[in-house]
Image 1 (cartoon, rainbow, N blue to C red):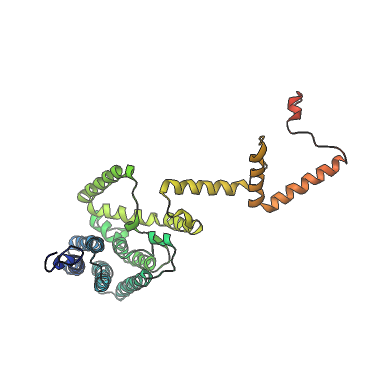
Image 2 (image 1 turned 180 degrees about the vertical axis):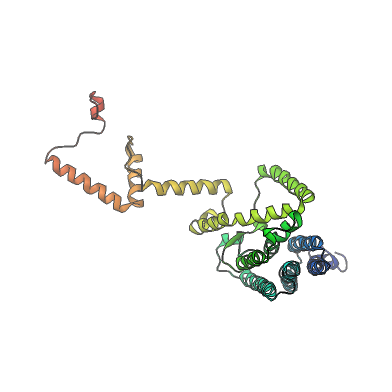
Amino acid sequence: MGIGRPANGYPASVRLLPNAVTVLNLCAGLSAVYFALQNRFDLAIGAVLAAALCDALDGGLARLLDASSRIGAELDSLADLVSFGVAPALVIYIWAFEDTRSGWVVALVFAVCMALRLARFNTLIDDDSAPPFAREFFIGVPAPAAAMTAGIPLYLWLHFGAGWWSAEPLVAAWALVTAGLMVSRIPTVSLKTVRVPQRAIAPLLVGVAVIVAVLFTVPFLGITIAGAGYLLLLPYTAYRYRWLARHPEAWDVPVRQRRAVARAARSARQLGLRPPLRRRVAGRAGAMARGVRRRLDPEGAARRENDANRRAAARGPGVAPAPRGSGRRLGLRRR
């Protein structure tokens, strides 16, 4: 092992690479404000996109190089606050609300909500009481997604020109809604923990190629579609979180088996709602089916047992019930 090379095999200069990428994230966010002051909003959006790319890379590099540190985590949060909180708020203010007091209030609310969202994220990192499946989700819309979603009116203005989407009241309302989503308790998907099946790799690569082609052809419309698609995914993400909360044992199983568990749970719930089985079930299988129904619907089982006792009492003592299906064996039809 050479001099200056730590035990993990990487030189100290290489282990500084994640922090360098985080600094690039910060510089890109500040550059977005610089471009907005020059009315180059297309370059401002590109700078925010570059900041989002750097934010996606620095954490992966830190884990790959075993260079995670407390100062790196704090620097990452400060860079995210500037690049995805302060910078988008100022860009939107310069574009739609310049020299208006109400617009400045909207910018302040957005930046403050971003700070609160990042503070909550930092506190939840060390939370050991969260269930294991919670690692698949964020609480609230994450910082890069919120920054890109808040700019949808600006993207439409750059692509289509002025319209109802660029009206000041709508832009203000949209920015406030995005700020509310950041500090909400809505679970959102974490792309860092998404597991891609082997057979889905090729279609995924084709989808990435299509996305890149759309971004190069109609970049602002493509970003708008991506932001709208992300928002439309929120109801499904909330449903998935609630389902895993009810079935935490299904978190470690593959997706295909998890779907089988979901189908089995739905079938089990339906067993208590269906009428008694009309097909002949012999031996132990019939006893198991009755036991399942009795466990899932004890009131219905007691009601059916009471009905059977009343029918037996109505037949009178010493009269045994006719075997099921005996009429068909004698050639008699049911009326």
